[in-house]
Length: 133
Length: 367
Image 1: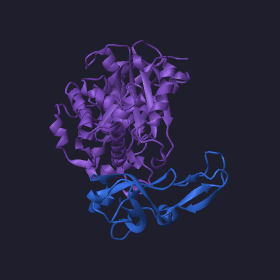
Image 2: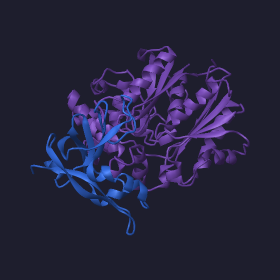
Image 3: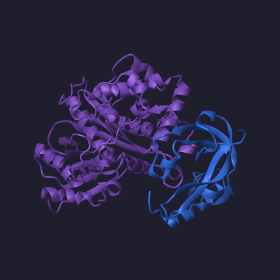
């Protein structure tokens, strides 16, 4: 998409760059993406950077992509479990699709996600790559 | 409480309608539905998923009414992603139930082919979380693929088993004059089709199509009735789900809809379900309680099943926010034997889902 919004990008930088989730101060439940009210009723949270290493629990190789990703296809996208019950939807990079295996250990890396044309934003975020390959 | 009857309806043949503006296409079917019902309406509800993004138009209801020369009527737009059609029907149903309105029209319309196919992916993906899912390149298709993998693993199916769904949909589409694809598909067609998000292939994806459908609902008169409507959201993000092989929103909506209508899944003679991707059709049948969990693909191997006689999203096409209105007419007409072979029974169900199990509406129709 062209003409991305600068404020939307900037306010989500803690999540995009550092995987910052919210932990409820009362019941310790961990949320990623962040929420404003915990299911226990509490509104008090602390910021927690999620672990940068995890396990790939499901994935797919995606060939039909949106306009931002045409030059990157196919995308390997999957769910990375970084804490008990917390799975981050992420791109899996630095690996050929046929080398990807379920349960493999992956680590967060800082990468370019998309570019808004020639004069717009270059947008970054965490992706995950295999640890052991 | 008032009854809600289906007094008239009309639908536009789906396709790529490059020669029509979105408001005029909606106006054509609304005009026909109003003529069939032969009543004056108190309000118009408009369902559209992507009219701002794809067609650059807001306030669609006013322009539809302008095209028909109808003045002073209240009109409201409902957007719930691909659930929009059923959501607008729900809003109209509540307006009649409350006694505030006697006759209300619902028109659903979407025209994805005002965009190129990659742009359609951008627009269709806006039902995902824009900041944490779509941002990284996820699309509804990619989530469907992961759920298909989880389902096949859990219940020990191969891809050939999942291919039964598009084959059945193509079989059904043949006898629906309004379907996008009216030809049968063989196993090798499915198996040799392009991989779009492994394990899913092109035949697992309902094509996005332009279309419009209108229905007039009235508290008076006879004919088929909407017996109940229930909608449930599922606010758990994809990454925090406890299970990837069931549709929580569907199960929750279905339970309430059956209870309010006073029927059980065994009373359902026909169903139109939201199979934007084949795996969702399978999970919808199970979420509606029409098939035991994990058993759908084994059942389909044994032959026909009374689901999606329209051809579903695969063969009729994915009309996005208009689909719910198509489904309501299709189920009603199947119960009446109008344009479809008459089904043996008095109750039909429609299932309309928004996003990947983020919201579902279940409607029970009776004749």
